[in-house]
Amino acid sequence: MAERLIKDYSSPGREGYSLPPLDVPEVDMNEQLGTNYLREDLDFPEVSEVDVVRHYTALSEKNYGVDSGIYPLGSCTMKYNPKRNEDIARMTGLAQLHPYQDEEDVQGSLKFLYQLKQDLAEVSGMDEMTLQPASGAHGELTGLLIIRKYFEDKGIEKSKVIVPDSAHGTNPASANMAGFEIVEIDSNEEGMIDVEDLKEAVDDDVAALMLTNPNTLGIFEKDICQIADIIHEAGGLLYYDGANLNAVMGYARPGDMDFDVLHLNLHKTFSTPHGGGGPGSGTVGVKKFLTPYLPKPVLKRAEDKYYWDYDRPKSIGKVHAFYGNYGVLIRAYSYIKTLGGSGLKKTTENAVLNANYMKAKLKEDFELPYEANSLHEFVLSGIKQKKKGADTLHIAKRLLDYGQYAPTIYFPLVVKEAMMIEPTETENLETLNKFIDTLKTISKEVEENPEVVKNAPHNTAVRKLDEVKAAREPDLTWD
Image (cartoon, rainbow, N blue to C red; front, side):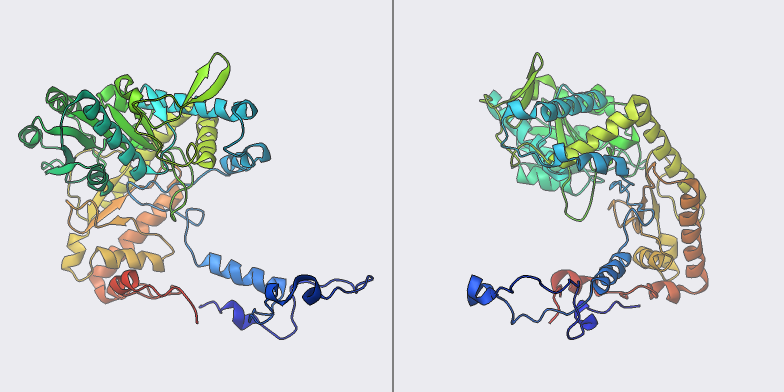
């Protein structure tokens, strides 16, 4: 049912609170403040406290979030965030700090930030990290600016960045923003980089290859060592998009695969808030030869004292106000220390197990475009359902009728009618089975009555939108 506007709860004279009669003289606010500061002409609703609470509670229940149920967005890793980490981030001694406080006053915070970057370096196999970047795409841009600065410092001109056709859309966008020309290479029939095509694309003008491993199909690039050799022999660098680190964490490290620079999405792998345009973290790691170019300041330690090093003549400069999204970093640190090394490895095992369980259960109902083994996510195609009258978008909308959220759809672009599913390690068997059964039910509905699916959703507060108009002409106000 549609929720009323807060103004529709209004009743003349109704108030949000009651106080006993004044036992002191009443003050005339007009005399105290002047009429310029009073806003009595505003038509505020006259409502009680319970009206307000119930109204906004009703609105919150119309939204779907990871606290409501499974959020199987492939490559976006929308997993449940333990509330313990939220509690720690809200501790007064941490939440009330100010970034301009003197280093001597915040040694405890600098210590945990230093330990966090040491832990992330260990997990990823890199030599040094910066915690400044605010998101994955921001981390990509930072890493590419480091690569550009490195070649400029060496007096070497390179203008190209190679990007696979299955890459995250931010990869070519970030490379373009960093001033590089984009060279796209195709995937082979197994869903991996075509090594022969890569050899043809590489020349002396290539600065870097941007690669996610496992890639956006959830498939591990088994030729990674050969790929690294091809790029390095041409004088280029290898960039790791860390969006899918949660598929290999504890089992394989990008640094050991010969990647030179990477970013890690703390708001994916390390269970910090994600989505809604809020704060994230795209922590960047580099091998030793690239450390002079990291954003400044760099957090360092001298014996038991921690300090910010601003004396970085080759640095690319600052990429973020202050030193990064501090609250997100606290949560990531709490998560890592709670689980420990064996716990982080277990999250990888569960993420891979959950994805492969769902894949095995659904591959007969939907087309499976690539037979290669999957890790933490997998891609199905709704091409069979489209031939019967309902495409992938319709399936996604129909999921809403069953109280489920849709997977990523129409990505990666190399798969027609793509459905990219990542259940994450935080979902239990009951939740997985419920999602599997719902998709199977919808597939059967397409067989028997595709119009039901095509016209979905049917029981949500808002029915199907004109998506193009909603994106280009959003109406977000009430008159």
